[in-house]
Amino acid sequence: MEYYDIAETWDRKAIARAQGIRLKNTVAQAIKSPHYSKVLGEAGLNADSIGSVDDIRKLPFTYKEDLRKAYPFGFISVPQQELVRLHASSGTTGSPVVICHTQDDLDTWADLMARCMHMVGIRKTDIFQNIAAYGLFTGGLGIHYGAERLGCLTIPAGTGNTRRQLMIIRDAKVTALHIIPSYALYLGNSLMDEGADPRSLPPRIALIGAEPHTEEVRQRIEYLLGLKAYNSYGLSEMNGPGVAFECLAQNGLHIWEDAYIPEIIDPESGEPVPDGEVGELVMTTLTRRGMPIIRYRTRDLTRFLPGECICGRAHRRMDRILGRVDDMFIIKGCNIYPMQVEHVLMSFPEVGENYLIILEHKDSMDNMRVQVEVRSEYFVEDMRALTALQRGIAGRLRDEIMVTPKVELVQQNSIPRTEGKAKRVEDRRKLVP
Ligand code: ADP
Ligand code: ZN
Image 1 (cartoon, rainbow, N blue to C red):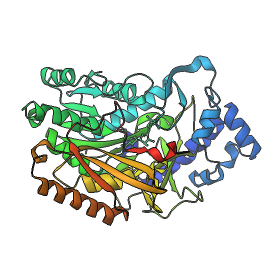
Image 2: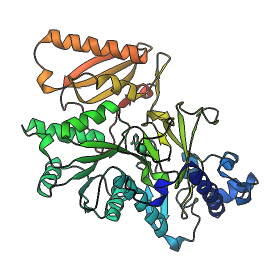
Image 3: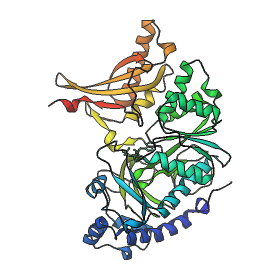
Image 4: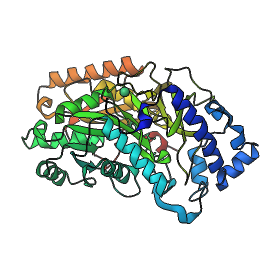
């Protein structure tokens, strides 16, 4: 097995030892920031409180709200002249959060990202197209510097302009892509609509991430574009991409435990859940100096996968993200995540790539409607076939989520697309006074 760096080969013992030392250093560094000097000071905690990695549980959680309140520089632990880059989260769920890096922080991040890409078989001989928003969003520069660090010929393509993206892919004979899953499907389908075969495009590897997606969607992307797609997880608060990544086994994402301490907790009680159970991912940075963050409540739901990975890496694996705690909606007393709906929809070959869940309050009742795009070749005039499909989807959804939604079949490309992360739920109930 070829590794990018030494930390990739650490066993559990080496990981725990490094985490203990790095956690202590992180607390010593974090306490220099206005936020942690106050919070840790009030709790009577400092670097001496940390003897081993298990002592992490003594430390308080950090919430997105803390970062917002400290906007913009309340978490900074170094003199301002040491900072060289500022990023902000894309603000999917509210006002932005600012993250600043020193040059060392950026170097470590680029190495983590390069390690991820190397793990899935990308090498310096590859030509890499980064289809991600550059700017404050971390998916642009984060992946970009990783690809350059690895030595790839790196193309900062940015988002949008499908025609130009395809032209570059073909002309530059791009071998690897970074692309958001919903856009990967869109790109493939636009080619099909033109009568071209997306499978004949040169890329053999795609890094997909930034938004929740099901295994079914990954398989569709792989089949449609004729490549291997690897799940890439990250969040701005923990740098951005490069936090956890699938290996060639495509069975869970290795969390880079030399750089982060992951915990999975019950979001209500804050207590750790038993291994293998779903809970909220909590992350601590271990190598960051400009802006360390301790026990950050990501709001992302996942579980640790038990057992060892066949690739030999000891860094623990997490399951693909099931959704955000905040994405859950309640209808008729049932808790539902958009990914449960996607899982059902994508198992129907007739169903196209886009869907929208609409929640409404009508006649003093909550209703759920699901708009589903049907592939052009199935969107025929045979009403019986479409009615059967509609009933089939509604029935399978009822089995999965215990609620029977109203299913509306619509033509391909008729649901408005958002640039960037896909929007899966429109909750119109909140508009009702
Ligand atoms: P925002 O919270 O504004 O979207 P980010 O751009 O930092 O800010 O996005 C990070 C979030 O994106 C994660 O917390 C997670 O919810 C989602 N995300 C990132 N990668 C993945 C992935 N591979 N699978 C599922 N969700 C992901
Ligand atoms: Zn592995």
